[in-house]
Amino acid sequence: MNGIVEINDLKELARRRVPKMFFDYADSGSWTQSTYRANEEDFAKIKLRQRVLVDMTNRTLESTMIGQKVSMPVALAPTGLTGMQHADGEILAAQAAEAFGVPFTLSTMSVCSIEDIAESTTAPFWFQLYVMRDRDFVGRLIDRAKAAKCSALVLTLDLQILGQRHKDIRNGLSTPPKFTPKHIYQMVTRPRWCLGMMGTKRRTFRNIAGHAKGVTDLSSLSTWTAEQFDPQLSWKDVAWIKERWGGKLILKGILDKEDALMAAQTGADAIIVSNHGGRQLDGAPSSISVLAEIADAVGDRIEVHFDGGIRSGQDVLKALCLGAKGTYIGRSFLYGLGALGKDGVTLALEIIRKELDTTMALCGKRDIKDVGPELLYQPRNAG
Ligand SMILES: Cc1cc2nc3c(=O)[nH]c(=O)nc-3n(C[C@H](O)[C@H](O)[C@H](O)COP(=O)(O)O)c2cc1C
Image (cartoon, rainbow, N blue to C red; front, side, top):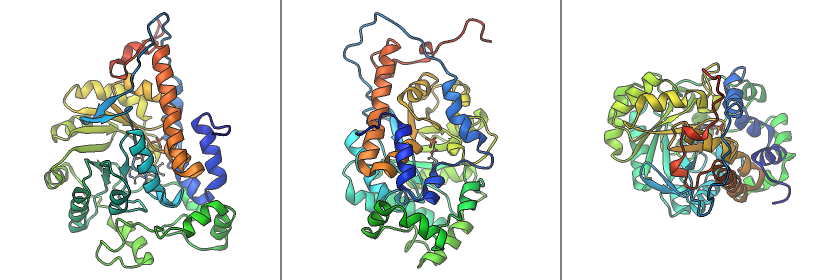
């Protein structure tokens, strides 16, 4: 597509097409954003070993994540408010992922509901759960994910209270959006986005509105979300959630090897090494810098997945070499969505696939399942 060759091109187009408050919501980390920046910067420090005169024919990127076949080990991460990057954003992203053969993960805080996605796709998708104080509502959310035939539950562990994001405060971001002159200006200067929004009925948190007690209109909804995330969530809760769900369970938001070992004891199917894309604890290490030690600590007790800072297929390869069996992209697909809707998500996936495939070949490998630390360059005097 015209002039778009890398994820950054999609980001710049999204910046021009998505109202500032929603573009900034995606392109932000907490406080000083040091962890958000480190997620990307630390990838660049890892060097690859170039190999030559190795047969490069018949390459394959096919693999599995939690036993499910994937055309490449890259899933779409759960992201809240995706339907504000583009009208019906979650439906479009899920359809693009299905056509591509990779998993789509729907956030609890999505605009389109579990049922919206189930009606608009045929492949099973994954559902990400935030645990609320209202356990009855949580139980019903799990049941709705089961009824929609979701093939994995992704339980997020690292957001029981919210890391402060300065851009959101300065922009006055709220859900639902306020209609002050500043916000109206931001929206009307993005006519394509406005047209899309006028053409859909999906403009609020549809997993929640009408399903949780006391949430009947938009204003009560925002109060409800601020009060509802449960700061007492504990390892014991993982047990009842696992029991109630009864299917594949992925624990998201592990950044410390002690926690990884605890997670392995829960009997969950996988962990995601993640710092929430640098949106929670600013000052925490980048995800890629802790991946190898966590993967080494858990060994083969639990499958290790990874997210944070992936902006190219090279980043995916590096994460796989350092011990991840699967990876997730957040902003890389959101930028595609904001730029070009469903085609933009497909394009983001295509860009990553091509970079991953070529890089793997130039490192002398033909099968993504065979890559390991031997593909990374270690300078002789490295400690
Ligand atoms: C705009 C945005 C919204 C997010 N919302 C959620 C969410 O609702 N639930 C969740 O578990 N993670 C959420 N995340 C974190 C992502 O799942 C993922 O961990 C992160 O985006 C990975 O980093 P990357 O964006 O650099 O790929 C969100 C991330 C972004 C950028």
